[in-house]
Image (cartoon, rainbow, N blue to C red; front, side, top):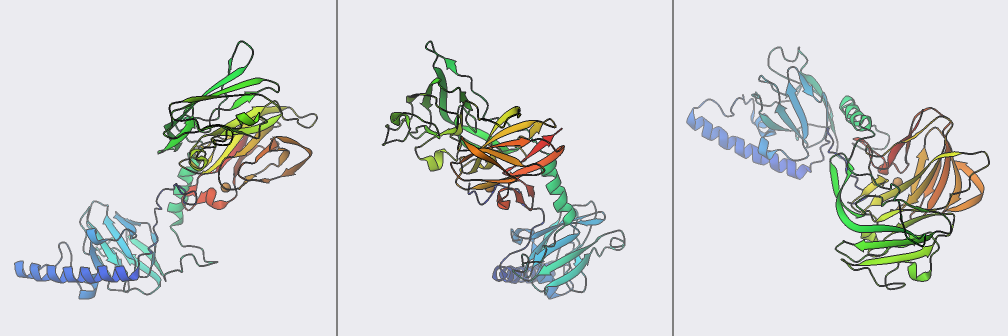
Length: 463
Ligand SMILES: [Cu+2]
């Protein structure tokens, strides 16, 4: 997935950006077809040119497109008893309306003050209506079946010149109710249930000499990033992020990696002190760990440290696809009088199959942080992506107490923390403001869309 193109549902209200040339061609073809149909139909029964319809003029006929000729970018309008949905339709010049009778009785759509009108549509009928003859401006449309307009079947059409839609300072005209409803549905689903939870503490196997051993298997699994969106994730032990590894300062540690990937791999312990031979860089400190083989890393834990472990082989593929986890050694010192109730790694990702995520999930499937009023929560931001992310918490300040696991002599407070790739920032949050507070990357294309919030968004809930 391209990180700049987040996976978002198709918009309900579609702006038409269909090239004029193609539209003209469609209109011309439609005219030819209609004339042909007229001739054939006239030869047959001499009365009706269009089934279920009355043709008022040649130009009106040419504007009506067969369902199969409706371009993909057409603006949908649904006809029912007794309303149009949406009630306000946007289009650019040369666009097409896709008019569908989703009701139980006959309807039409007529653009008032013009000769543009659909044939009388039976239930389930669909036609296209070309707007090629319309100048930019506002139009009213209605159903021409007697009584239907009075019953509520009217709507508004705004035709904009190409390029006008996103003009600076001009708010795009939308069906606000439909847009709001779509956004609300996404946000109200938070926190949405999905299969799989990454970043959980992995209990070590304690060997006879006290060594703490962690067994990791690198493998590809189906991973549900957000409800209904499953991707091929490259994982440690089947989860994204990989399990959190936590040891004490001075512990002897072994990490056994079994490679079940289609490529060779390795593990680099980012931000931890290890012997050179344990640094995990293929062709510099070791040979690659080939598919079907295992490798054991061993070192003594020094710290405190806020580290990450990740692949250093084809890392551009393997890491954003999920091969990364938190590695914590000891405790970060906190200011006097502070009692931390929760320590939470928050892994940032923005590329690969996983895409824009917090701890391997995209909003609304991200997990909120829930705290009691007065609690202190420690969060480790860990950036395993390819872009910097300004992480912004509403309602409370974040006290930065460590950078890359190195305690700061002078902690500082901020509400937005910029975390570059590879960086770790440790923040203390004093939960002193009750409520549900949005918490998100402030690069807006990583968090918000016309269909609602997605990607790098979660919330802090203070009760
Ligand atoms: Cu971001």
